[in-house]
Length: 176
Image (cartoon, rainbow, N blue to C red; front, side, top):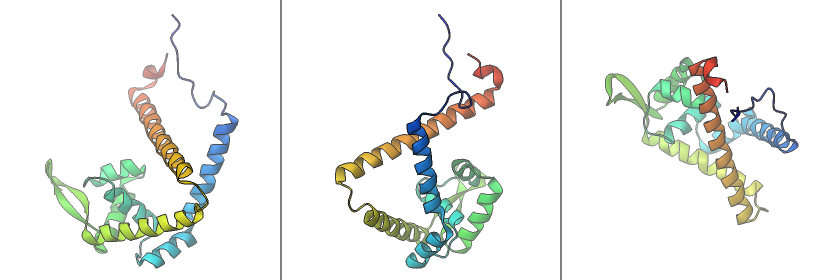
């Protein structure tokens, strides 16, 4: 039997559908990442944080308290970036450092009541804007989109984990 190998992105042409999905996601990322839009949202909710700090705060809210290095891995950024953002969030009272129960020398980052309230206001206002933009969509269309987005994110994460594991194992591990 001939061993099957997984095609690499460099050798597999993307389908027309995948190209259109990538284009749509690029447009969404642009719209979601605009500074003016972010500043407007922060003014509406009364949270004086930059985009990077908000992304970190949302990640902290979505998980158990974790070490800064783990946060950096989850957000795919350098640890020094997370350190600066954590300092800003601690100073603002949005997060606190707590001892790591597994290693008392280390610390984990935990959201505070003020941080939770800020994230809740941000998410509520973001959802309201999205609700208005998608007001002509049926509940079934919205559910289908949500399901497909979650599936896509899960598949991206799974693919990234597989690629990362292959890179850690070295080139010999990736050969068919």
